[in-house]
Image (cartoon, rainbow, N blue to C red; front, side):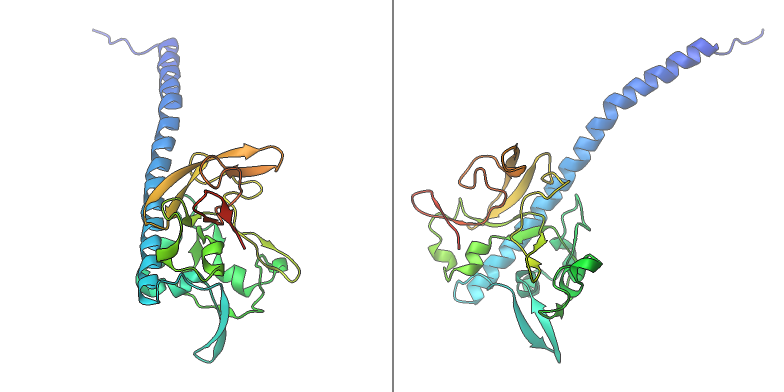
Length: 242
């Protein structure tokens, strides 16, 4: 008995069904993958937040100071907050967000000039090199003011670290305050970002597009309508910024 194979029409129908199913499943898969990366990112920023607290406990409850130049092993090095807390982290991979691990190359930013894709051009010292890529920024208000961790007015509302994109601006060039997005880039996780607060907890923060500012801003909370989470939340809910 001769077996009957599939007709061309039947094959086309099967292919069409597979294409429809793939179109449905693929976005779900992408979303699930990004959710897993967001969770891993939250774990990273939590570890960095714990390292900040451990550093403070060993240094009279003070947050790391602003960046500075120092003579280390016979060379001038530029010391960032990331270098200061590295002994409490001991893992360079934690500094990068899994959603975009190579986003900001700190060696390039520190050592090279803007015309070579960097920023400081080694003018303030060379990169120390304990890590390479960075996906987070510190709330510069905490490092700019001599405020101890135990005296942060509202620690559960005051950001310490957040998902960010630093920009190189100024004359001479210097890293500006870091924002939750940058031209051509949305906030990192489903139009939102991970934030670790002064009491140690991590929270997902939504963002929204602000047409007037032509940039993404924080959506809700004390930092509402700001492109970055810089500032100390005072007792009355206002923000202090240097």
